[in-house]
Length: 63
Ligand SMILES: [Zn+2]
Image: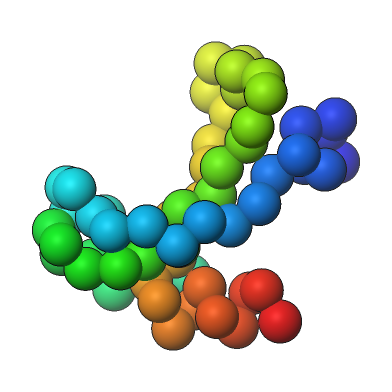
């Protein structure tokens, strides 16, 4: 775990561009709600990946 992992959280947001769920591969279309991993207060280092999940996988991940 990096020091950034403890700062990450899942936010439910509306897609402004199409995304792909990293868990099941579902395409999240523009305008649909999905879960996006976010970090506050710091800028993640280059190459640091933040997750994107469809609504269904996001609900399961948060549990
Ligand atoms: Zn999914």
